[in-house]
Length: 106
Figure 1 (cartoon, one colour):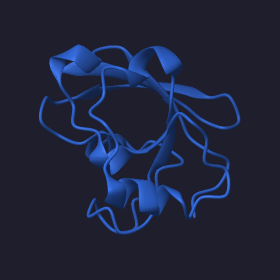
Figure 2 (cartoon, rainbow, N blue to C red; figure 1 turned 90 degrees about the vertical axis):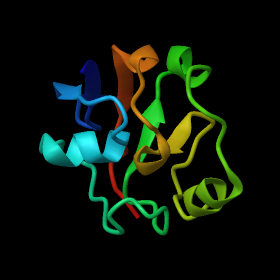
Figure 3 (cartoon, one colour; figure 1 turned 180 degrees about the horizontal axis):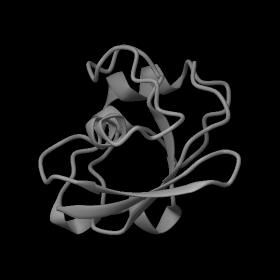
Figure 4 (cartoon, rainbow, N blue to C red; figure 1 turned 30 degrees about the vertical axis):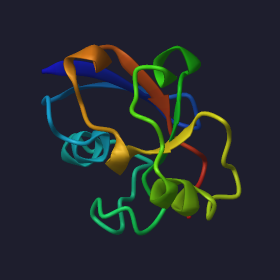
């Protein structure tokens, strides 16, 4: 298990535990994290699990693939640290990961 901090757009913080091998989206949904809609259930066919990964953690993630990049293109508030939480697999290296949710999911 790893600890992950989700920060909401309004400033609320929620620490959750995530199992190695699950996606960040699965961890968020199973812990009732506000701001992760996950409409497609993790199939990378929407952008409703968009998160902003704190800069220090970006290098620990696998590179973004073209499909995720295209889905993030649907989000008007995309930034350099935007990722889809369904595409982030939990590993031991992500213990302490900090992500923020956008104001709206599209």
